[in-house]
Image (cartoon, rainbow, N blue to C red; front, side, top):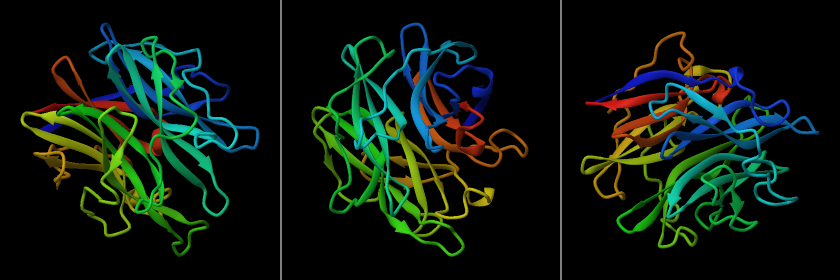
Length: 318
């Protein structure tokens, strides 16, 4: 199988994003509605202190993803309150239909002193078709724990076999690398399950996907979808340091297969994903998402510069 690219489908420089000075379109994640596909993403804008804040936006697309029907103008969700886990950003934002509602699992960001950031997973709910969301509560539904000490986030939630399954990243710790001005984080892909989507049980500290780059490999944004009688996971991975300036150490696409949602076999080139020199996604492929649209399995993803230049799509073909 291979991924047939549809190209870049959303360029934030061509649209007016909500929020003064907002840019980027990071971590595209879709919910398929009756007459359109709504793709949520996170923007970046500088706050009063000059540091970035990430907020949620969306763009509506035709079901073939060829036309942008519009971009939201009203706020989707406010940032968290003073001292809360999502005070300084929400990224990513993963929606899933539950009955007549749309539930979305957020990754809330809050700044720290010794290290730059901490994250946890929150739950927000929409009762107006996904235009606006309200928090299920001010705190997270999943966060650091005994064997996952930091940086729990990137939640992707689906309902399989009568239970909710959540795939996340979890931090194994921070490390000061030679020549780097500040510590960098290391994180792996984990799993939790739930009967109601609110109360979660972790497979505590169990990394699902083996490393390719050594023990400091960073793995992020897992997404899972059925393909025939198996399950495909797509994620992104990179080196823990030097990734901001050296494209050979930056994010690229990883893939794995499972028959039971428990044991995963890594196969980064199956399906094949081609990269073209000089393209908008030549230096980096990051923040993937999987969805099914009218019988097609679609991959959404960001390219160079962590989503500064928007997001693209590809279709799975035999």
